[in-house]
Amino acid sequence: MKYEKINSKLFIDNRKAFVAQMDAHSLAVFNSNDTFPISADSTMPFKQHRDIFYLSGVDQEESILVISPFSTNKEHREVLFLKETNDHIAVWEGEKLDKEQAFETSGIKTVYWLDQFDTVFKQMMAEVDEIYLNTNEHLRANTIVQTREDRFIEKVKRDFPVHQMRKSAPIMHRIRSLKSDIEIDLMQQACNITKLGVERILKFIQPGVMEYEIEAEFMHEFLRNKSQGFAYTPIIASGASACVLHYIQNNKECKDGDVILLDVGAEYANYASDLTRSLPVNGRFSDRQKAVYNSVLNVKKQAEKLLVPGTLIPEYHKEVGLLMQEELLKLKLIDKTDIKNQDPNWPAYKRYFMHGTSHFIGLDTHDLGLYNEPIEEGMAFTCEPGIYIPEENLGIRIEDDLIVQKTGDPFNLMRDIPIEVEDIEDWMND
Image (cartoon, rainbow, N blue to C red):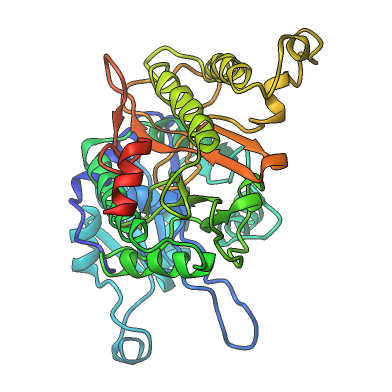
């Protein structure tokens, strides 16, 4: 791995938090992701399942974690099953975790090789009545592709039909939404790498540059600073393309007089950053572009103040909508008649600001969290209002990553990345 060794205390504490919410006489199982094929003998680069990483720190394929806190055999209360390494694998694939390294990474003392799983797991299941199975219940999840976890669930249902099946997802959504100090430090490192990328491209952007050249500059800076690359598919959208919310072609020329919307973020140690900045291609905003930009920035600043403990996320989004409504009135994009005649289910402001303002962030860009419960201290959110005016070939979005504090405004992990009009123009013209 490119990232520095993570303190195993993170994973030990995460397992304790999970166990605290388990029923008696139960165990839980977490599987690594598959290595997904492309064609012939080609595969996608391996990406670890975030849940097993969160609970163990193990970042390699064909791994299984079993948590069985009620086992009479103390050595079986936490068990890792790993792909056995050998000289042949080391030559062809590189070094894999041995048992001592697995303990140093995870804090788990009992490590078996995968070929022992069926025998040991049968012994463990004999002592419990319930098993927690790990299903993907993210609200935006695409669950068409069958995963290693899905295949395991089918096998458990066949082999242990009289055990009670429970869901790990509600527990994981709750505990993963609350960030520890170690996690916040890792997220800060991801944001710091993103900052380096932004500073690099502020000097690089000019009329005639291709969007994909900007993407390449980001990737260069990310990789040279121990990131695996982008935390998500980057959006490099100049001119009219900035009004396409998920524009990822990144294949157009940046033209004089346009604004370019950059929605990018580096990952670090599997933790995501998520940043958006809107920059003038020629280094100077026009008066109109500056007015729209400052309206978006004003909404963002006011919205951040609402990300405090006790806030309900659905109500938060309604409040932000009203803030945006006022800015759109000032910009003369809507008028009071539009508001008077609006559909309550699709308010007038939605014509120019059609997406949500905030989402959880952490190990996933759209991280796990409970959207129907009050915000708590230690949660991490993006804040990303935007105004999109297709008839003006202008799209402005501004986004930072924030940690909710016990009192006061949230802590901005991207506080040092230029955001004010004057700072952006100074950077681009220095």
